Length: 300
Picture 1 (cartoon, rainbow, N blue to C red):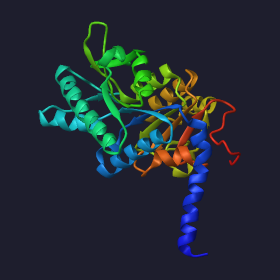
Picture 2 (picture 1 turned 90 degrees about the vertical axis):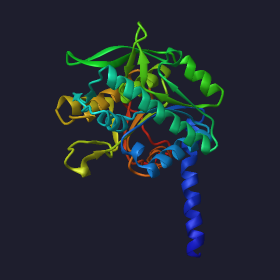
Picture 3 (picture 1 turned 90 degrees about the horizontal axis):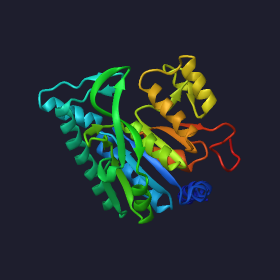
Picture 4 (picture 1 turned 60 degrees about the vertical axis):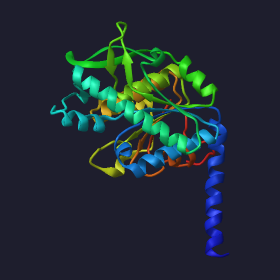
């Protein structure tokens, strides 16, 4: 057998390996929270969008919820302000809110443009559209952090309608309160709220780390599968800190609210979404309900 023939057979094997996952998740809703370095690097950005587009064309029903923190900080600096954070949340005064909405809207339409260029119909919407994301003012350990919102209700019918009409929704994490004031929403929180409201099959976070570590200083302690009970124990025992703490808590809340699986992936790895969803071993951390396995063909 020639080396070229073996190369083609290897490609065929990858496609066959993906088959049970395509069958399992056909017509299922998947929420992808897109942020971090994968949004800044143009090459990675295209690959992420290619992944989501392929999921759509394979029969999945993906929804993208995007951030834009680095871009917001850049524009805040351009107007002579300094970005301020409390417990990982951006302090958002009225001027910063205006900048954030402008920047996130620009990011939103650039993603729509990229998806459309790959032959899939996309619609970019803000959480303000149709009152999709209804919020109340969020406090950080009792501290006032300005126009930062906590999602209280999701008008999921809007998203069901878009999916039914074969659109790929791309959501900008901006919402309104009962007085119609505009609030910035942490993109992780927005993605989780949407995933909980729709009880989606999968919620995937694209981050700047490989996944959840037992010891963040030791890459060999990366955890491939994590049941809710184990995740809670890691938090209680003090293994999880920094930005991973609220992210993991969001994952636990999502699973307990009916989301089947949550994945934490390194968005800096090209095509990380496909590798996690379509291969037997995956590459990130999957958070699961007790006694539920990520693997469907019996391979562990």
